[in-house]
Image (cartoon, rainbow, N blue to C red; front, side):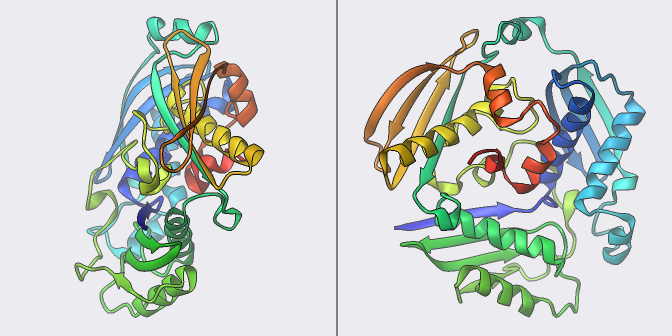
Length: 338
């Protein structure tokens, strides 16, 4: 069966937005592990808009928030030196970002559910696990797209705003597409092809299919949090629930139950010696319980159960009261799950 997944780097505009939100959450958690945080980010050119709600003992000024945003963008790699190489007309610089915070406090109506250690929202979440340890128990196409993208991002063969797409059939890569900024006259395209072939085992490779790709980052495309769910989750291999895992603290179901759905799938697969498992998880406002359906790869239900899954317990289980979110954004949401 033909399967296809894509991956985008931290330098992609949407991931810049995700990373900024995660960076701000980590700074709040360093001062107050009980922070409640829901902040969306939009990045266009060198302007960053923050919008959302925060309830925390950490009370940062607008100037401090601006400094954090600039540090986050620099940390991705968009530094002055990088901009000097590529030109101000082609990329951004962290030190030059303008920040406009539109932030309030969490609604008491939402907070009252979390106050009694129940879920503050309803939601549906999907997880999966495959008996493929060599691919991180993930779909092969998703694994290869991520592995290739991360290799190119770390190599600095080109710019930071990278996309990869890998098609597989019966677990073997059949076509690879790479979009990576390359300066005019840059001969690194051949090395990009070599890296793609070595990483995926595929010889059918397209690099920068439109031709020239120099202008990149949020100068080329507006970035918004939560738009790369297939990249963050399972590619085209699994259903996707209603919310992004980023921009939120551990008391939010969109983050914590996406992680837990993956863990439930892994545990059920291993306990029952199965080739693969899909999970469907749902929660309701004001309730600490979740309902879980376990299914095989064809959608046939194997088991259903209702269980208590209080936010505080899952936060401790996955270490989500600590400043781990930039690491999860860099390394993958399921880095917290084994």
